[in-house]
Length: 153
Image 1 (cartoon, rainbow, N blue to C red):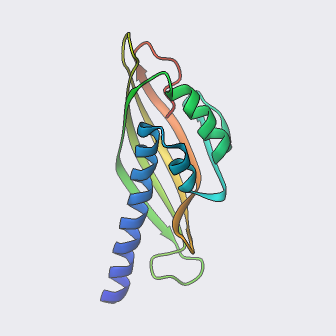
Image 2: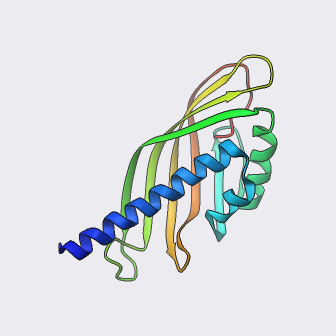
């Protein structure tokens, strides 16, 4: 690989990482317009594996807003990211990316016991004219502790 290709791949990795971090931040801040801006126009999310719904990004944003609204303090920490690129149109790093990542969600209600959830996300991203955007998100819960119902991913 040439240095130019290596640099392009590093830049793609940073851009993809920014989208994934933006996803977690949007959940924590209740920034639903920001959440939707992370998706392609046909983007979809599937939170059935975490006790939720599957649907368009807008449908899932509405559901998440309702579920997470009961937790004024929340923190989604997404780590252990494993990123792969698929080359479709000849870009050095690839035109599609998949990120498998682990998530630790801590959700604090106004009163009562906090909820802690451990889940795994699979993010599908596409390179667009506007940069990297999500086209799919799949959340699967692995464990939960606390009084809360659905943790919202």
